[in-house]
Length: 252
Image (cartoon, rainbow, N blue to C red; front, side, top):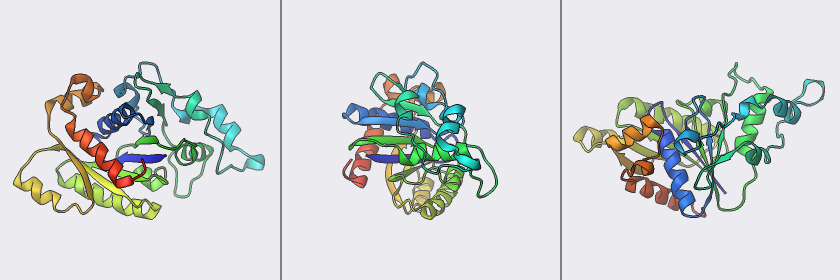
């Protein structure tokens, strides 16, 4: 089983990439689970889920039962493997979709039952061999600071050809290293060939998994929460990224 987290600043196309990778892996016969880790839940809709997907952060009674111990103690590794079946929805391609919901923010070192439960969901779920878990992370890099991406096999940083995205990438690299995430790949979205773009890309020293060209079809898909394949957009760039991921991770 392989876990892939997709990160980057807001609006760079993380959800579209997560949906397309989920679709392509499922089309190739993989069992795919996709988790929306953003407080603004869009991934289920983009993957064609019409029913409401209940955020796992709202499972108050379940969290109390699984995480809280005697005398106000917490269980660091609560049982969570059954949660995936009970609180997920599946789309027409058999992709299992869940919503993580909002993780409570607190001071440094804060450890609450909700955090314990959601981190266990991300880090300790039991999957079969050759399953794929895709995490559509929240915008920015706060999730890395809280450790919710810890334990992933590959962190994909989605960037646009701009200085701010590249600066965000540098911060992602540092925090990922602190969490022990060894493999980081970069996807360039809304890519347009130019001399300035070429110089900017020279500053990226991580593996570039692919470049998604700027295309109004992709923009429309993003705005309408529809996968590009539903609009018959050109998806060759996504297929190349998926194939490069398989080569990079190995054993998928």
